[in-house]
Length: 342
Image 1 (tube, rainbow, N blue to C red):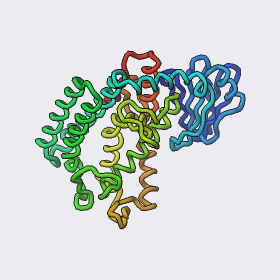
Image 2 (tube, helix red, strand yellow):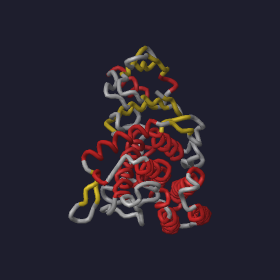
Image 3 (spheres, one colour):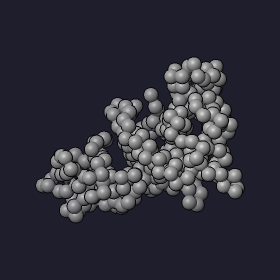
Image 4 (cartoon, rainbow, N blue to C red):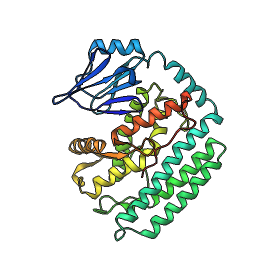
């Protein structure tokens, strides 16, 4: 259980929430805790057991958003303020998305976080594996990404941002193979490819990005935002554009580092991949099960959130960022604070 920004996150799979007077009672297999409802703006619950009808009714009457997810993070439903009060939040989201002038600063923040985190993933490898990597190549690439970060701030159009981001991504993935320390014959990386992924590294990256996009979409729904309407990525039928916006700053520190962990710790081998007739490389059933098990473990690991300056599990980072984005859109924050990994 974690309380952040007046939002209560119930992470235990066995928790049951009920109304006791003016408090929410959280009962798990080994503990019972209560929190006054008047201190909460929203409750995000990841348990199988859910909540009592009395609590759901109270939240609906008091305008406290109560969102339900399965333990893997898939959004189920919500009660309270999300269906009513947040119509104003979504209308403002749409107005910002329809104005390049207003959406540009938010898009810059997403990409500032992405480039900053990409740079420090490279520098972290230099620090931790100085004898195994090409130090000069990684430092050169990180220096160029720093230059692109400066270019972001001067961009006046969304197309300029996308061009700068593309150049920075080319620098980052141009040295990504240096971060692979073991079994390079199987996990050699030359370029980022997708639809379909053509090698095991890209298969792992694509699968991780897909899962992270789902997590971000669920996080955005939990705060009342429309995951399909973005500020950096344009509208496209079926694409959760705002979720794709939100994962940009999380790709390198969460998704890419997780893939490198799987490879460098020899968790996967050649037997875990299948090459299809069209050349696509995919994970087999055994590999997907192992992958999801490791992914859930990673999401439970804690880090110090740079903006909140509190420890949170990696799995909650998309929810914190979605909440900060919603507060910016409502006017509670002067700017959206991107996630800068340290």
